[in-house]
Image 1 (cartoon, rainbow, N blue to C red):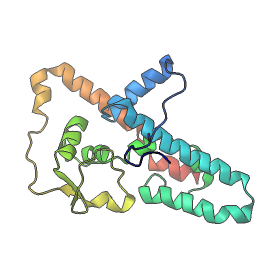
Image 2: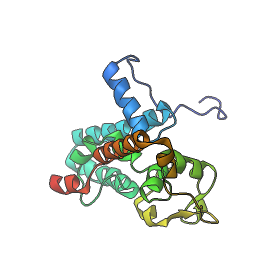
Image 3: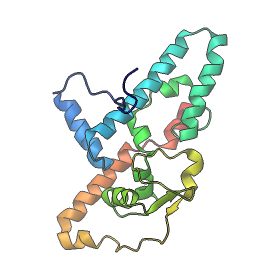
Length: 199
């Protein structure tokens, strides 16, 4: 069983440590989602991989055994907001870590305009300025459920911050870089139209 005081690792590292394409992709995702380190990315990959593995096992079962467990899996993903409308196991099999990274509190706070940048969003959360459903949350990796989308607000007094003045101080290159990051972020974001087209 092990020592209960020692937490089990909640993620798996890649088997091959040095793969150029994977390293570049990880570096890009880290930048696009404002992650502190690759551990946060590995955790998201492990969760999605587990869900996909469960879906594959369910497809191998007979229909009567599969129905109840399939509903549980799909409901858990709909509750988190990763899947919408009437999903099937095929939708689970094509899930990517980006779908889960979109549901992180850090990403949603930035998307809602409560922070200028992803780093600022992370800082506000860690310093205890963000509440979900009236409760202070200080973990940027907190997965926001679909029902909590409209309940993200300031904890206590609203933070007053200057709107993007730092980009002007740094010059036009900084503004260009920020626009490029936003563009990459938009491209990485899974759209609802794609989900509707699959139906």
